[in-house]
Each structure stands twice: as structure tokens, then as C-alpha cells.
Length: 632
Image 1: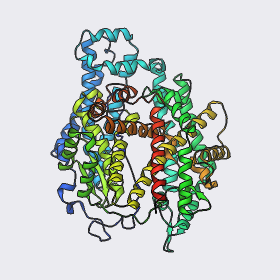
Image 2: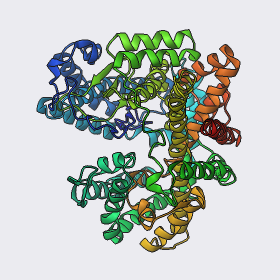
Image 3: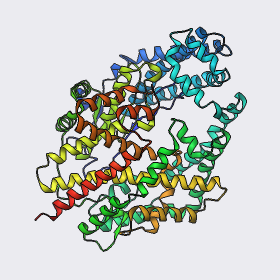
């Protein structure tokens, strides 16, 4: 997390929340119905937050320092172009504020997530959030003031100040977008409108999470249960088809009932993207969104085009699943259920760690050494406890502090994959922070899912190679196929739909509920192929996906998976040279543009090759599955 003027405070964590698939997921570790308190956990399974601050008093000391010194930004206002030394002093001060704020935020956020009912931790988190907003406002003059200076003048400063040369790439990135930066007054107006422009998304969240009422259905044992977002996700994995169908149909019922309200919010959000892209003089909303990370539009377009030309692997998977399940019709609510329900294996945390360490050995000795260090020094909060935040995440890069990982371990195979995934993020942040100076000690969201999904790919390969039965091997291949389906094909489908609706609005066409449903139905049918029945309910997926409000975000899941698959293939084929390039990728942070960082690692995302390789991998897995299924 960075807090300087070039990247505003967001508190973004790399997250992966996996739906619970077991009946006893809400049970405590001792098998009782209640969750253990924090004090009942062995220390080795909990975070050591003293690595950030030894005491809460030290947190308060840093908080007071930021609060007292923030006004010093005013000393630099109007003076950034006076000399190289004054500009350097301003940049250095901004970095110092950013480092303090990010450390304060990390401590308060992690403390809060360990017990969401703790009012003291919540108050500390609210205080740092408010202080960060105050600092962002005080420093907001820096970007427009620097851009008001001639670029040649800034470049001449590099020869006059050795310290300032550190920021050369930051300034290059800043001036790269100068033609899309408006006057100081216009920028202020756009900034003032940012809170209003967020209303469609915030309203969508409140409406769908808090106010929308889902119906009651009978569960697998005949008991009445009210559908929720979590129960819907879990039900898709149930082996009881009628239960899956009941939950699926019921879950979409309120989205259909409130289609006019939801389409108005959806359309309003798209119109916001179009407004800002036009205000900043971009050719399209897509170009504006991708330019934030200097991603060529061809990367997005190549992804969509290549996938549409190679939908057969997904169609083939649908045919195999339909046949294996013995169904006359395969529906979307059948696409997640396992073909091998008899394969069940539990993993305690210590076993999970051992499996991950073995699986990731291809990453090389240095990577494994640092992974062990994380395991042995309480970087991970492992078990669910009373009041703890659900799901899993890695805390990202905080300069001067190692990253942390939150888990809620339930002894399932999914927990092992979550551990591998989050430790991918963790090691990415660790290597970046250890190698880069503060201005570049973070990485673009475009590459954020590469290290995590690379770890998952290696784990899957390892488990498949060490499967103890044909059924276990088949179940693991199925998981691999499900990962590619959901993270690659499905996200690309979302991305294509996102492009379509923005094009409609840019042409002045309305986004009515019927039009949105028709577009999504046609797209989903094309992706899944003729062997899948697309129910009317599925047409309303546009109404429930929060990522559609993120502004051309979802395509990066697909490109991230494609990049990681290509990198893993190179590591397994080339060995140490590829490992060295991969570690350099982890160390690069934001010292270069994300496309260039990946190119140095050996993957060119401006070409179609990584995307085609991913689909080739899926065909290989399907070949292996059919071969095993045909064996007597």
C-alpha cells in the first residue's frame, strides 16, 4: 500500500475468499459448536504484530508525528519548480509521510480484523483512515503543480540532484498521462465529483448485501434455510442436484424482481466511466481504464479475440461433464459440482505447510528459505476465532515490514490451495519490499495475481503427480479445469460483456434490463457452447457481480492466470535461468511498467502466446482426464 501523491491511499489487500464446502466449517477446532477466543490459540498460529509496533503506545507516537507534521506540505506548495533540491525535499517528505501512514494502517487494519467486535481496534482503524484522507488532501497539490512545469525542466533537475534521480520513473509515468490531466481547477472539480460518482457502486453494495431479501428453500435434509450469497456459492458444489437447482433459482429471484433498479445502477456506473474518460480526452472508457497501468488496449483485445477463436476446450469440458454426470441437460448450476465426490482428504495446517513447501521446490532454494521464514515467524494467522474476519488475504507491501497472511483454516484441500495462493502474494510483496526503494516498493494490480496463481499451478502439478489413486488424480485434474474455467474463461466472458456495455453507452444506446439480459445470454451461450442450457436466471448475472462496477478490472484475472501458466512452464522446462528471471519479476515492484516487468520474466502479454498456451494446457488436462475415465 502506498500513500504518496502518485498513488492515493486505498488500503487494498490481495484477497481470495473461497466458499466453505464442508458441513463442519463453522465448528471450532475442538469440534464444539462455538469458536475459540483469541487467547485460546497457540501463539505460533497467530500473527506477531509486534513486528510492526512493539506496543500500542508506539503506534500512537507515530500517529501523533503524522498529525503534527502533515501541515508541512504547505511549505512546499508553489515551490516545486524552484530548484532540484526543493523538489527532492518535497518528494522525500512525501515518502516519509507515506511510510509512516502505511505502517500505521497495517497495524490498525490487522488488529481490527482479528476481532471485528473490538471497539478499541475499530476506533484506531477509523482514526488512521481519517488521517490518511487529511494527508491526501494536503498533498493533492503536488501532481498538478509538477505537471504544470515543463517536462524538460524536470529532466534537467535530474542532473542537479542525485537523490531526485531515484524518482525518474515516477516522473516519466506522471508526464506520460499529462495530455489526460486537466487544469488545476478542472482537476479539483473532478476530485469533488468522485464521491458522487461512487454512489452507484455503494448503493449496489448496500442494496444487494443488506436490503435485498432472498427466499427460503429446503436444504439437502429438508430443513428450511434462507438463501444468502455464501449459501449460494456453497450450494453450487453440492452433490444434491435438486438442492443446487432450488438455491440457484431462488438466488436469482430478487435480481429479477428488482431488475429495473439494478439496471439503473449498472447504467449509472457505466456512464460515470464514460464521463471521466471523455473528460480526460481518451478515445474510450477501455483505453482510459487500461492507461492507468500503461497497458496497451491490444492486450485486452488479444485476450478476447484469442479466447473467442479457441472456445472448444470449454465446450469439450462441458461435454465431458454432461456425460460423466449422466445428464440429459447440463445447466450452469451443474458446472461446479465434482464428478468425484468420493475423494475426500483432510489436511491439518502442519501437513498443509509441508505439502506447499514440497510443491514449490521448483521455485528454487532462496524462495523456499524465505517461505520457511514466513511459516516459522508468525506471519500467518491460521485458525478461525471469535470475531475474526472471514476469508483470506495477504496484506500487500508495507515498506519496512514483512507482509502478513490471514487464513481461516478448516482442514480442507481448499485451505492448502488458499495457503499456496496467499503465500504467492506474500512472497511477491516480501521480495519487492526487500529489493526496491519506497517509491517502487509495490506492484501493479495487472501483475498482482501472477505470483499467487503460479503457486497454485505448481501445487496442482505436484498433487496430481503424487496422487495415490486414479480417483484422486481425476479429482485434482478436475480442480485444475475448474480453476481455468472460472479464472480464465469466465472472467474473459465478464470482460467481453464489460466492453460491450461500455460501447453501447458510448454510442448513446440505453442499457435496459432486457437488453442487458439478451447480451449476457448470447455471450454465455457462445462461451459454454451447445451442450449447456443457459437458464433465464443466468441472464441476470450482470445484476449481481460487484466486479462489473470496478471499471475494466476482471480481464486481469484471465491475463494473470495466462502469465503465471507461461512462467511456471518456463521454470519447469529451463530450471535456474527461468527461476532467476521469476525472482527478478518478484523483486521489480513498480520500478518499471507491468508489461515490461513481465517481458523481462519471459512473458509477453502483448502477444497471443500466453493466452493460447493456457488453452493448450486445458486440452492436455482434458486428454488426461478422458484417458483415465476410459480406463477400466
